[in-house]
Image (cartoon, rainbow, N blue to C red; front, side):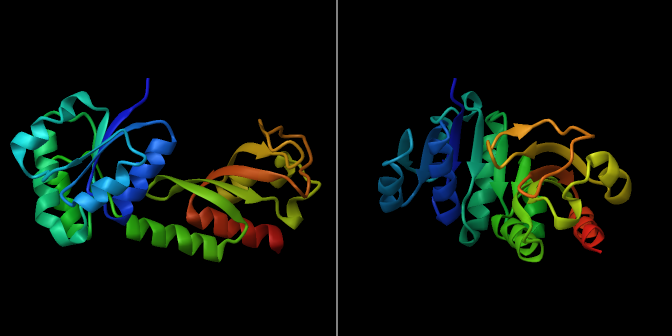
Length: 221
């Protein structure tokens, strides 16, 4: 069964989120007070409604307690509205609320009024882009926690022909190899400790930013 997710606020972040969730099979209910944005979103979401999400009666009619999640993606110019909306969603029993914050004070307030998770898209993008700029060997990365990432990276020249046992990545760099993607098949296989790495392999690793930096410096030295 598809997840039912409410996306409130269709600025650039909210619109992109609603579109991506819809592409991945979620049933998205998009909300915004601007009719032109609702008309744009209606082309790809399950349902789109012109609504002021700070109106308690209107918001209650969406039955947030029956949805899988709600994202309060209201923009930086409406901090008060985002706080009110988040508080109402929690009061109405929404099982999982994600709220967008513009700064640390806003983040603390959103947590206090009931957000289960608070995000800052601009800050998170800045961190990811910094890593892509510094570590061009990283193909794609997903944040698992404050300083823990699941990343896919090219096998470095100093790793080619060596086994994971020989490289001792957990002991030397604090890095765990979760899988190996073979270029010939594009399939991810379970890492074999005694299988020599090939130049076209990609490693799927769990690490911190500092671990990646140490790894790249270590295998190149």
